[in-house]
Amino acid sequence: MTESDIYIARGVSSSKNEIHQAIENLDQGLFPGAFCKILPDTLTNDEKYCLIMHADGAGTKSSLAYIYWRETGDLSVFKDIAMDSLAMNLDDLACVGAVDHFLLSNTIGRNKFLIPGEVIKTIIDGYEEAIEVLGEFGIKIDFCGGETADVGDLVKTVIVDSTVTTRMKRSDVIDLDNVQPGDCIIGFASYGQSAWESKQNSGIGSNGLTAARHDSLNNQYAGKYPESYSPEMPAELAYCGKGDLRQPLEGTALNLGQALLSPTRSYSPLIKKILAALPGKIHGMVHCSGGGQSKCLKFGKSIHYIKDNLFPIPAIFDFIMKSRNIGLKEMYPVFNMGHRLEVFVQEKYSQEILDIAKVCKIDAQIIGFCEKSVNTANQLTIRSEGKELTY
Image (cartoon, rainbow, N blue to C red; front, side):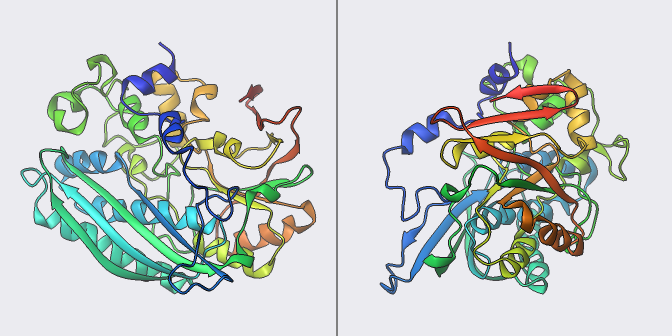
């Protein structure tokens, strides 16, 4: 069974082909090539402006937070889950150039038998703390409240989602249809500790967590916490790794559980600085979320993306790979593998962008370049650790 087959057998999909097929006939908005759907400003009917609304969440990472809390008593992991939910929205919106004033509403679904009120309070506190910190770095967010639903018949532990909306000038929209052959690709590390983070980040983000927890953690967790995964999953694929939540992750100051639960970094303060410094110069931005390093394939026209100078693979991804002997070919379309944001721009502007990243305490480098594809379809070539991988 290939890793792709295993992923499907676990009830998830990195490509989300069924979802894309379900929505392929929907209206694509004002800028079909943009990272998010962009709508006319029907609230004011001002044709110079547009509206963007985005919904996302922490995904199955909340199930892992549940296990870590039950094992250690550490409630604080649920604050980080709120950051995951928020960042997954903010960074998608930032990739179309939206970095100013956001409205946030959160949605929490819980099994009340297993998730007490103190967990809910911690999650809500996490949203408020994240808003405060990002506000200090120029990202204004108004928290509009939300919904907490007791849906134990549907949710086995807890799910943490949110919706973020904003309004912006159409002239400021970043449209990935503008990515051109000759553009360089600048990558921004997902690991380390940015200027707005209070602790080291493993770089894991919020994508691929179903694979990450089952492929890295050992089978004791399947027996202790059957509520943490789907009963339809083949038993041999549940928590089939070698790791323990409390064991130190080599090369970091984190244990394995902390590394898997590192909150998703928001790049929105960085992106705001880049757009202010280089208005009109950015051809595109990609948030390497669902689809990992292959996410770029969904955007641009007849572009061959070549990534040949990637960051070193962070320790958490190395652990996942070695825990179940997973190859790079399977890892790159699932995980960010070291950088979760890409900016496409003419190379002459790259040094200014790298300097801004340094101020933000985020490692950045040119990780590749764009060529014209040999046909109308986009292509991706990754050269890493002596291998050439094509998608």
